[in-house]
Every structure is written in structure tokens, then in C-alpha cells.
Image 1 (tube, rainbow, N blue to C red):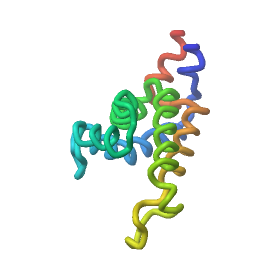
Image 2: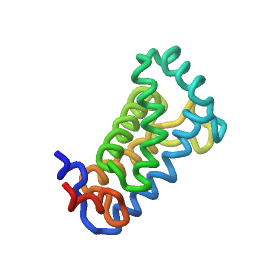
Image 3: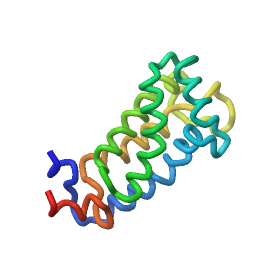
Length: 148
């Protein structure tokens, strides 16, 4: 179990993927947890998820925490496969539940009622690559391989 969870190569490509995932996912998590970048913070996001979206409270908390702490785990390369899989599931869920009715494309020109799901598919693909390949070089996972 631990061998698979921490397995990775010494390649640099996963490092690039991890940094990219952090840069694009962390601000979304910070909106949800901390209210940064124009977000509503934990209380507002939790209320939206459990009220308007009708999510169970535990699922709302897991989404908020996964999107907030998952990118940090990716940045340092710790539990990379778990963090990447968790965020990928969140992205796929968001694409299907919240964005599919708006079509594929991001709402660049304000012509749609909301955002499409192309960002979520792109992010999920990047994250699935990390699930398959692991954290790569310069990661906690890479340094733990020999210990399990």
C-alpha cells in the first residue's frame, strides 16, 4: 500500500505538474476556506454547498478542505497521488454538477449564464497524470520511497 502511495520516479515533469496544479487550484481553495480572492470563506461556502447545492455537510467540508489543503500537499509532493485523486474527483464533480449546463467553454466574453467545464477537464487531466506518475523529483514522496 505505502509502496504504491509514494511510488514515483525522479523525473522533473511531475514537479512542473505539481507547481502548475498548485498555482491554479490553491486560489480556488483559498476562496472557499479563507475568503481570499473574492471568495466567501468557509462559512459562506459551506452554506452554499449545503443550502443551494443540497450537499451533505461532510461532503461540503471535504470539498473545501480538499481544494484548500490538497494543492499544498501537491506543492511539497506529499501524499501526491491521494491529493491529486481527491482534487480530480472534485473537479470532475464540479464539471458535471455545476458547470455542464453552461457548455464546454470558459465564459470569456460573458455570453453564457456561467462558466463551462473546460477548466475542470484540463485540471482533472493534469491531476490524473500525477495519480499515475507520482510526485517526481524534489518531493517528500520521492524521499520516502526508500523508507517503506
